[in-house]
Image (cartoon, rainbow, N blue to C red; front, side, top):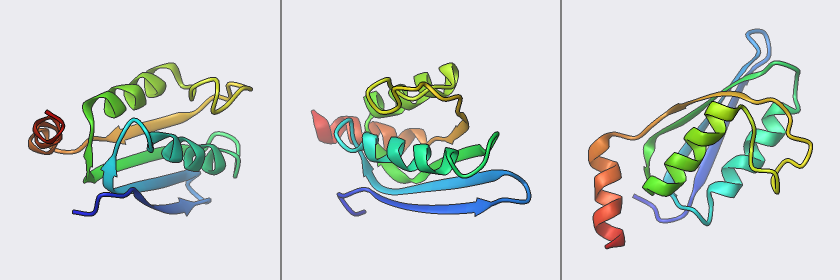
Length: 107
């Protein structure tokens, strides 16, 4: 598993959806990189559905909770998107065992 965040984006304009696959480690420090990628993807076309696939990543619990908060509110943090555009995205979370492994590493 790599320590830095790596992101791959797939866009299907016909179905108005994008998948952002995160690999490596997602932390509170680098989750803002994911937000920037989501912001760019959202600007491609109105109503784009974005799926954040984090099944191949180790994710800090705080970063995952922050992403979930954004998903529930349909907005990114204000300092990332001051205009507070509407975002339609879902999260494919990592396995529980991976999330626990990150908590153990952080302890």
